[in-house]
Image 1 (tube, each protein chain N blue to C red):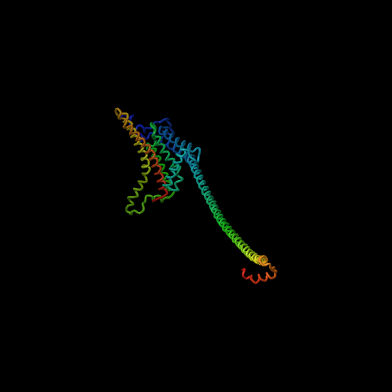
Image 2: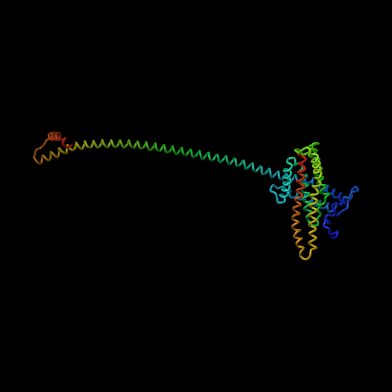
Length: 163
Length: 244
């Protein structure tokens, strides 16, 4: 078995020491620090991105809150305005209605007065007409000329029968 | 079977250039060449793939990072925070064994992890290092490592020698495990390769199919043994910090 032949033991140990020491020192000083920096750099980048993502999320949440606040505020304001408008409209309507009522009442009372006045006038005229008609009728039938005073006297006595 | 066709012939060491230093033969051999290839592959791969240091990694860079994270995770799982300072060593050990095994899977290429002297040297470095670490951390109290609490007192004369022996056999089990796995796998491949040639007619395709399957298994074992070597090293480091 060649493994147990001590002829090349020293040679193998020597070159093993040389190559393994070189490998160890090279990896320790050059290769591994390089890989470590790459891994560290990546981890830093990931952490950075994560923290900035978190920050942005917080900002977004803040903005959302603000928007909601404003929406609520706007809703309240519009509600208020609608109420105010309804109230003022109702007031307007009621005041206009009352003024209309007053106008109407006034007009009705005016009209009543006018009616009464015209009735009175008519009544007066009726007396005159009656007198004239009576005068004419009596004149045609009897040739008696009635004086106005006599006629008026008669009419006044029978006035109650006209109404 | 003639000696030149022996399945063990692949483990023979051939000097590429003869060098002698202070009376010792330190010839550059095919084993040294395999180590050189291994070290070159590891250093070039880990350096070139991470050269751009991009935050979004290329596929090759991702492989380097996965290996890094694999061993880092292994160390933090077994040893905890104390393990970070041993990371370069454990990582070097893992990569050296892993790529050494993989380089050995290339046909006609020498497998240096199939030599007990190499694996034993690596295991001895781990064992001596861990023992020194234990004495640094706990001083003379490190010997209480062999004392198992909660056992009837009359058992201790039996248990303490067992614990000492099991501790001292750690480098042996660690090195023999890797060495034997590599030796057995490569020998088996070679034996079946011999069948492919020597069997009559077309029946040679059966051992050939077996070799294909076995090659897949060997690649799995190459990874598994490197992993076992690394995780046992981690456990031993953990023992140096936490006594029973």
